[in-house]
Length: 499
Image 1 (cartoon, one colour):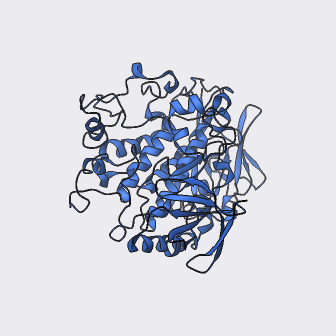
Image 2 (tube, rainbow, N blue to C red):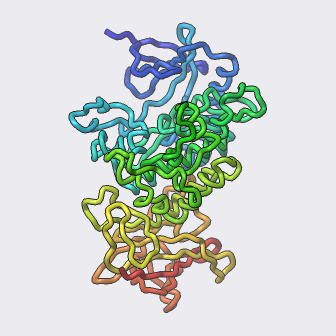
């Protein structure tokens, strides 16, 4: 019978763990609590004074600064954050919550679970590369494109919050992010190596594929060389951009067909990911395009940037991809912030449209504002009348300016408080009341309707008709609709696309 070990954390909490290793990585051995509600992970090698101090800060002060603030509960689902430190038989360890059950594979891999992944953690790599998705992952685990957008939004929020607290992850990659595309969920793990600039340096340089070019370029230099670039906030932003690109397009933004050294594979890798890194979809330099002829069938069609270009992600994300992989690739100061990504992902989620093809693998796509919108993934055109709501907000009473934000309408689409008022942001600070929808859209008898559930100021400006709560308003081309009065209140201009 396996024995249960009892010991105390540094702050006096009693913890127990079953003396049987359930997982072992490069740095730690992991053990379950008897009820599996938490794990205890012990470092394999002794940690120096600075490492211990950093861990105490991560489990103490930094944890409290994130979880004990307004909206703190929101972050419990986004991070697997250490709660306490302990020592047992001379080994330093930490206590952390167990990953929720949806972050473990339910169905295993194709062909009778040939890879034995059933019950294993859903590492992001399985969902970020077309070859792995198509060859190995059970279709029931893959989710759809809208859920991948939600995963990216969660990641952007998690990184934004760490950066606001003055922390950097230092090793952001699909190894350290668990995802559940079937529900659109994500969780950042391995946060015990957080970097505090100027105080706690990084333990690692990162995971290949996600290491920023400046870190790769200077990796041969000693750690104390002033020219050496180490992981920090800006390198997190490179990794975040790579993750978002891969979760939406299932290919790597820098791994193209260009060869820099035919004789030395390692030097070629260092150049292509470092000093000479080049976006595979660079608008004016096509020398690193992915060679489709050399690809495996399982990587198609995603590996084909002509067929599925990054622009299918819509105007807001396309702009940030260019900023991250062209302007900011070798200039860290120009990289989009996590907040930039969060804002763009929220706006992009408002632009998605359900595909009319029931067999479409991705189910959703970004409306491209053309007169004949169609799904880029399966080619199915939209048919019928498609309302697009252009959002305007008030800076002064009666004066409205465009917000560069639009909402696509589809049957069942919801309207929320943050659509009605620009001063309400859809983030962790939303109250329970603000999370509830205030209206929804329905197609009935060949017309589109907005049903008012909780918009006291709703008015058809064109006819000066107020729409009471419980009432409904037919949408018409060129119509102006007031959603909310006062500071930040929004006005909608209806644009009807007839496909």
